[in-house]
Amino acid sequence: MKKLMMILSLVFTFNVNALADFVDPRAALVELYNSTNGDHWIRNDNWNTPVPHCTWYGVTCDNDGYVVKLELNENNLTGTIPSKIGDLRSLERLDLSDNNLTGSIPSEIGKLTKLIILYLNNNNLTGSIPSDIGKLTKLTMLYLHYNNLTGSIPSDIGKLTKLTMLYLDNNNLTGSIPSDIGKLSELGWLYLGNNNLTGSIPSEIGQLTELRTLSLYNNNLTGTISSSITNLTKIEISNLKLYKNCSLKTENQSVIEFINSKESGGYQRILDTNGNCRDTMSPIYYLLLN
Image 1 (cartoon, rainbow, N blue to C red):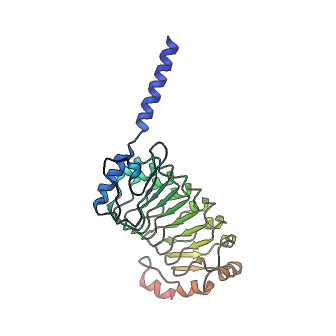
Image 2: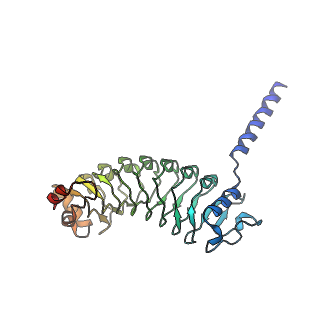
Image 3: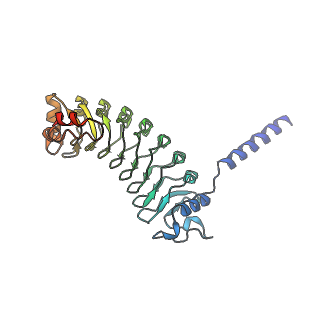
């Protein structure tokens, strides 16, 4: 009898936990529709109607009816991304790019632990990149470029060790490039250009030996360019972009030769465009740099 009670207790606990983990994807989708002015989307076929949510435009489900892809790019979404987006726990691909979304990226995005691809680029998103993004350890592509994101790049981004593409360029990001970025050993494309990043280029960048593109142009970076950059032998010609920074330099001839072979305009272009010290240096220092 005692064994039977234990078994029944375990079964009950399992069922309760399973129910707790179950989240109705339809409710989350409706919240997204309402939060982003779905009535004015370019395509909203079947949305917010009684027909199965797996038939709604841009929604792809698995055999159990869980949403695995949500692709609403270039669809005139306006408004904000609701926190209930985190209830779509089975999502593997989320593409809300090329819309007019505003507001911040909700921290609940960190609940989407099955995500492989996250495209939120080309919107008007503001606020900082939530540290919870570091929980998305299956991500291979993270596109947040061409927004108005502020704050620093969270060090938690170093937990995304499967990333092959990281695009954070054309925002208003500040602070230094975290050394944890060197943990992204599979990264092939790193775009951090056209922000307000400061400090030096971390030597850990040299650990990203799969890089094809390293774009750090038009920031406020300073200091000596680490010799570790010469480890990045897979960078394609003209795909190293270090120009238009505050004061990058090196006296290491091997580094200069490497830059000359990879950056359009070579090391001289970096020297010629130094002095790009926006809002971080006094006007006197700016004159001395030039």
